[in-house]
Length: 424
Ligand code: ADP
Image 1 (cartoon, rainbow, N blue to C red):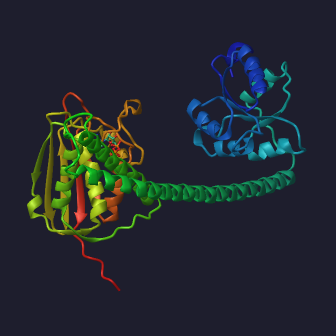
Image 2 (image 1 turned 30 degrees about the vertical axis):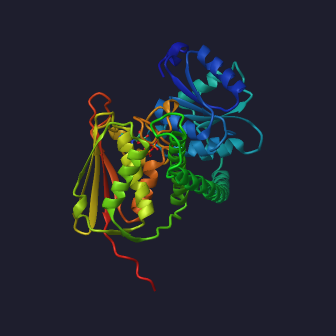
Image 3 (image 1 turned 45 degrees about the vertical axis):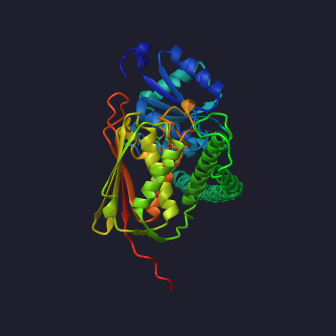
């Protein structure tokens, strides 16, 4: 400290850890009127962060705060190199005998009891800044308080671990209830959807249905739209169901020989049926030479559908989607490359997370093929779950997102050719 008694506090930074707003306001006023700079925070964990960030000259620590209490925060702060020497002063209502000693054992430099004496307080703070250090009088008392404090820490740790374990068990239970609900609701929805879809298809193929599919308002036009919408609804329910099953690690695969060329052609055919208004060029390469792989053809169809419809959705009219496949040793690699808007580097891993959507959800359109049509944000989660369920991998490459330059994206899918499981 320099010699002059008054303005030395200018620029001296005090961190006050306090969860009671009235005490906080009072201490702040008293100290600021004396030229101190006061930073406050209200709970234990944030106190540790703020103390490291702000590097205060002195810390005033309320003991009864939420989360870690003032003793524990002090002990933690003393383990940090930059905070080992600064004064930490407990400021708390004297409730129990020995509180002062407990504070000193935890690592505090001193103790000021609440309510503070407004006239005396700045002088007390200055004195700690100038090096005052309180001590416990006898070595015996010190040893006793140390044992008490260690026991208390162990008790608190045990309580917290028990609490966490209980909370975890409860969360797992709730998660299971949620998954069960989604799976049951999904199956319940599927049954009527299948019936509606079946009848709609029956009507669609009836030669007696009047009108044409290009004649708005005609019976054939309406049935055509209804069939496409029901089919899309079925895909959405399928995606939701699959995410729940993947989450719960319950995605069953019913494996058999799969001809990827037929699956990809079927996806393109179905896209053509529901998205004929898009003007995109599709280019296929290497599909002829692919060997059959062992997998679940329905699920692989869904994975390919999700990836290919994304390429359609995020490529403007006039663009191109190239699907190139080749065998590499015991695997098949499929690359779906579009000439679309691309994907920012920082999002290329997160787009596989469930419900992750890059575009503004306010602009959401529920089309599976319209440009930037958007979806539920589960398509790639499902694709990854299915492909990894087959022992494969999926990842994306893109130079970034740019709606003018259209850098495009390439989704790579690697699938093992595999063997049929042997029945025992
Ligand atoms: P959604 O159901 O919304 O399409 P997905 O899980 O399939 O969700 O995709 C997640 C996000 O990844 C999309 O919202 C989109 O922003 C981005 N994305 C996926 N595929 C492409 C692509 N081929 N080109 C550009 N962005 C894409």
